[in-house]
Amino acid sequence: MRSAADLLVAVALLLPAAPLPGAPSPPGPVLPLTGAAGLLFGRPLDLNRALPEDLEVLPGIGAVRAQALAAARARAPFCQLRDVLRTRGIGAGTLHKLRPFVVVRPPPGCPGSRTAH
Image (cartoon, rainbow, N blue to C red):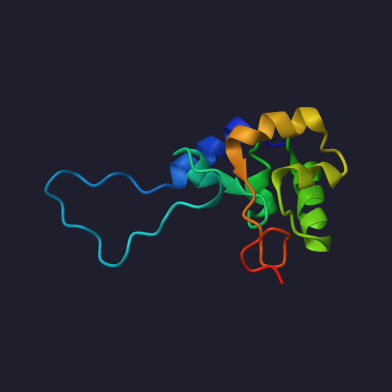
């Protein structure tokens, strides 16, 4: 079983190295860091869009809970952070550990969403 630290190290190794001073810039646009790689730079994971593999690196979330989160949002997207409590295996303690690392960007149709009808 992989630990969160192992996954973060693996993601860090996959990130491109910083260019040397005076080196030409690579062609094409610079892609934004998303998923677990974004966590390394303080970017939260969106629980409605993150891949299960990315969710596994969150504190208190392993492979089983990551799959449970993905299954719960497939049944009904999370409209607010406390909606994750409907996920089997996620309680108040886990939610407390997740708060600094996650966001919920509600999809259209959520109550209170600008695009809700």
